[in-house]
Image 1 (cartoon, protein in one colour):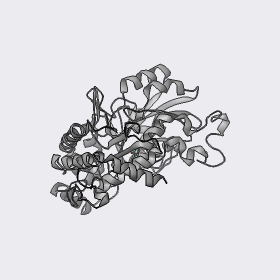
Image 2 (cartoon, protein in one colour; image 1 turned 90 degrees about the vertical axis):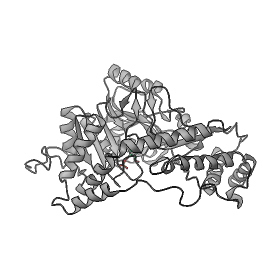
Image 3 (tube, helix red, strand yellow; image 1 turned 45 degrees about the horizontal axis):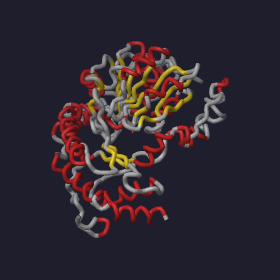
Image 4 (cartoon, protein in one colour; image 1 turned 180 degrees about the vertical axis):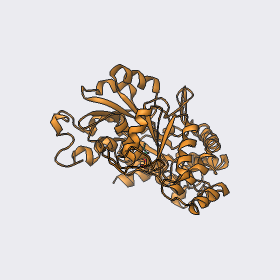
Length: 427
Ligand SMILES: Cc1ncc(COP(=O)(O)O)c(C=O)c1O
């Protein structure tokens, strides 16, 4: 095995081999420039067109273009009728706003531990987390893999819960051939820089339910009941925020959306190369694609089996040593989240709205505690994972995926050296 780059050997993936995301071509330039020279830079014609095109692409009746995925999630909570003091179930490992969106509406997140294989909420642990106050679930399809929606909907129907899908990382992911965002009551997508549909920042709320669509729009635009396309009376009928996206972003989104299906084919091809090349590496746990699911490989997330690597020390030190060695080889791996959600201060300190709200509100939070030790699977995942996004994305093709795979093979073939590095990093 050749010398590791971290010890002065030649790096496997050369600088410039991996191209940036997203690819930009004339269709992006044309639409964005047309918007720039257009007459409405606020909620202009591209916003309306983007909503219609995204709804058609995903298979929803209604879509509302927002300035973030977090805004779309907050709209979902309101549209689902969640209010002060209600309990809402959510996974214990995700982006913070999968759970803080619940606090935004003065409701209380109740965390459910992870299923290690899928890195999604453990659907078999949901029922045990339901309380008399539970109104809804935020179902996060993490890293491009859909949650088993059959199981989710069965629990939701049985307990009369609304389902808000957090599809911020999962555009185009399928469960039983159905796209995410089409099974629950409503869904949120993000168009932030790293997402499979990138507009820089932005998001989309989608639903098939007309009443929920109307409610979501109220919260989206100042509590008004008419959208910026209609005659406005500028009256706040409800508590509203300003969550609208703008025209140039929508123009960029339209251009990217037209290319999404092609991008997915490329991601799937690149994911297949990594799955094949890395599948027999001892100690490396690859992401799974259970039967009935189509993964987008949005974030190709691996975990380390510490026992198989002969490591009984701090798992974080070993994980960091492996990452350091891979990064030196030019494989851009990283830790996505270093804290599970119940370990984050906003929950542990219950410091949301101040004065103890919403937990202190009429006893709504009695008995709700956020102890990270109650989520051992999420913690194990968190401590042993690393992932990567851009090498799998267009315009990078299988030659890039092969080089990245070479980097993994090289590093895992020199485990003695990586173990020594982990020892230094833990001392
Ligand atoms: C799972 C998940 N939910 C919600 C969000 C929030 O999306 P945004 O950054 O567009 O507000 C993100 C963004 O990173 C995410 O990954």
